[in-house]
Length: 181
Image (cartoon, rainbow, N blue to C red; front, top):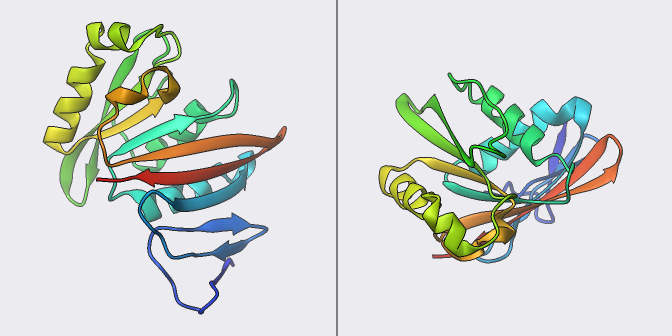
């Protein structure tokens, strides 16, 4: 059973760190770390559940990390947790995949984007990515963006920037930072 603590023994909203079955929760601030999450690949489903419990009020997530850090894998497990109705796959070649699920009793969409192959912001705009993000924000959909470094100016604020780091062949750490309104 995980143990929850912070310096004042008060559970604060948005920030959670899971290390060796110990969950540490810290108070959040705008443009500061929201979440520190360490997980092994065997516990990725629990990590996805904790991630969603803490961050589902945000709608745009920028997943950054080296090749094979586990961006697509984490998104796949997150979509599995959300009981997405569609087949979840990497949008490396399609650039954008659309998934559907129910959140708080309402139908919702996720736009899963992979910007790895993009050469420039102009190419992203030509590919319809800017329009997709604009419509997603307008309609309350979620955006999960892999390789956001390729066109960071297209990401609408507020958004959560996530850095995924490989700490061993089977372990990852994730930090989340909110970029404000």
